Length: 201
DNA sequence: ACATCGATCTACT
DNA sequence: GTAGATCGATGTA
Image 1 (cartoon, rainbow, N blue to C red):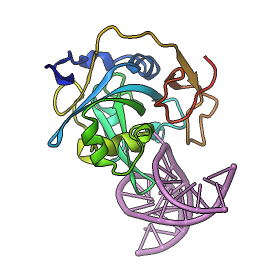
Image 2: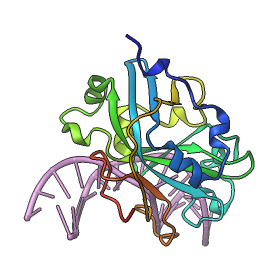
Image 3: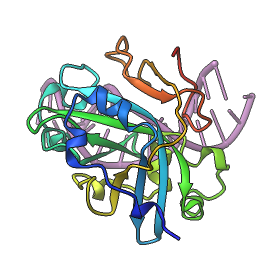
Image 4: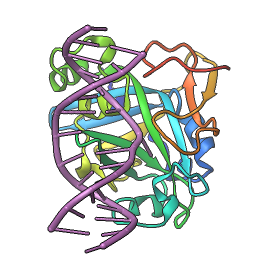
């Protein structure tokens, strides 16, 4: 039997366009984690776009040590530590020198659920990966993945092929105090694994 | 050096 | 619905 690690990987050029385009196109794709524990995979169901001209973007105030990966080439992981306890996973987008990223906010677990449960003991199935901090814990992704490529290596994004078509809805991003008027959060409408329900279609 | 602030989650009311 | 946990990065002194 073949697993998610045999599916075709999205090329680096996938991440070159505008963050908002990439955020939308990522929905329905597979995040595949090949950890020492085993292979895990989840379908991306919720994303948020961040851009240089956007006050909520970490890179808005210029380059720092933390956000430097965002200024690099597209198709790399930008991982940072937040609230003293959560790791958040982003994908770097747009050409080198232009900072941009897509925050991965929720996954629908599809493979290696036993490892995810082991990483989040006692957590109900529905809450395994329905939030940005939860999915990194479930897939044991932390700061050591910062800067890693997404088109080769232990963390990849793959194309599962034609699947069910689901409507995409956009809404305001979550947990930010600036740029709230920008509706750059994208969800697969009504998906049960969203971190929160979303706005209008 | 020190104070502030998070792209959050959980547990509890 | 909301309080509290918890710590690295950043900005100011």
